[in-house]
Length: 366
Ligand SMILES: C[S@@+](CC[C@H](N)C(=O)[O-])C[C@H]1O[C@@H](n2cnc3c(N)ncnc32)[C@H](O)[C@@H]1O
Image (cartoon, rainbow, N blue to C red; front, side, top):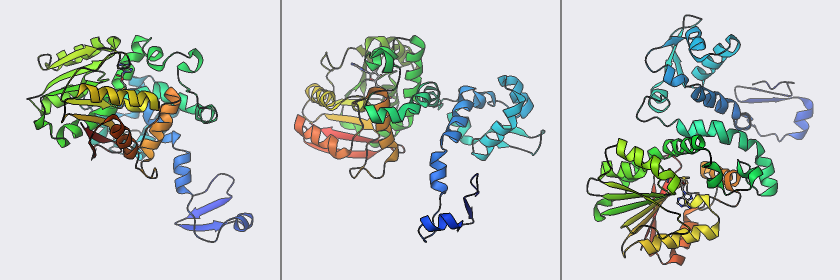
């Protein structure tokens, strides 16, 4: 690998340093590829985010297409089309069946399943939201680190985050789709991993579109479920619960979880709720869950729980930085943190169930 200016050349694992570099570098063999890969990580990230924004993977739903046909269908300029598509091939997000302009591009198995809008397992919502919001806001991470202040839409209005976010109907829908995308795999993993047979009722607090209730209803026909969220979210949840034909099993309840008691249930779930708040508000929500449960009830949080030593779950740690960008004083936490807060609230035991990728469920029993 040659870096522009050629101060360092690395060939097949061999470090060849020039005389200046030799003086300042240790003699052991060093490999800069990880530094470069992460440092330039915004290149592949934005290439994929733009492909999702342009709905490229949906365009390729039916048939493989040539670069020219894709260019015309998406309204793109000739200059970048081959670089863009071939970069996606090299990154493993597209297939190409031949070299040259005759080559036709198609989805890989993963992009067909997860990034084609017509697929029932589409999860591009989180990437659409990241492209429209987080990609730009993360440009101000350094400022967030210096000030401890949020860098999103509230940066200049000072309004509470959800009030600001939901003041625009399209942005509310986009945020809901984002949550659907990031949470789908975790919700299925929870439905398969946790033993719901001992319980009859579940209330999902901050349930957004009602997705967790719908997934649990599908896996566990004996459960009766409630999805609880802010009033402005209720019509979206009612619409998706009705579309899934589950309105007889899932009720949609509205309220403010800081002002109202939570609906009572055998199991209280909170998917990526606690990480949105500071410690005082986290403790309020944990106490509210305790109040809403019967003895023996289970309180389940789904989060990108950070490992107790805070060394391994890089996604969880960066999710916490994302909470700095979004809220300022909100933060992600370890299982040990959660267990301590729950014991303080009166819960007996806490266990952790790994879910999809970097996410886990932590379960506290009353
Ligand atoms: C990060 S989203 C999580 C959505 C979903 N649980 C998931 O895991 O995909 C946080 C949710 O909390 C809801 N929420 C925020 N403030 C709330 C409040 N004061 N009362 C009730 N729900 C609230 C939001 O509307 C949103 O749906």
